[in-house]
Length: 159
Image (cartoon, rainbow, N blue to C red; front, top):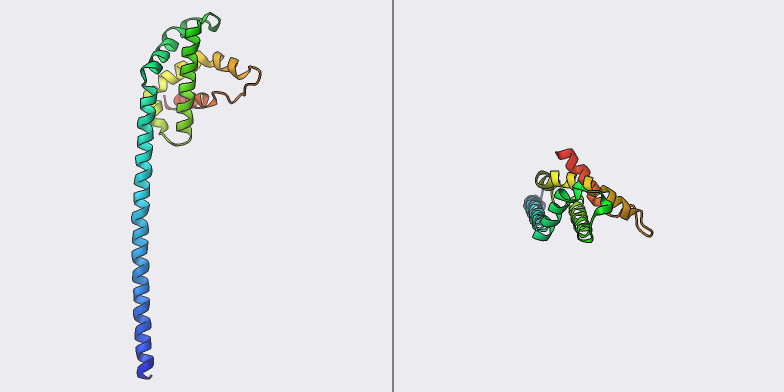
């Protein structure tokens, strides 16, 4: 073997070691970046959960839920006043949006079910005729407020 061949072999060996070293560094960087992405996703999910909590705890919504649970649950839908119907719509729409956010994975179902499960269940059972009436109106869709129904079923599983 000539000196040229020997030097070439040594250089190829060093290049191979450098290449494997670079691949190892890239691999470690990818693992770190993957961990950072997971942390960012968890942070975003937590922020969405907090926003959902704020959304569900607005005074107007709390009052509407109280009306549904304390007043509307005690009388037939035909006797609801206009203001009571507004409360029913507000609760239904609010829980429908919450269901859509949870269903899409932006907030954990455990958070909503653990804190509002009994309210979701009771409100849905009180408002089910109201929902069905709106779903069967001319031009309406059966999927209208369907996320509230999905959230109701999830709450039933958790409670």
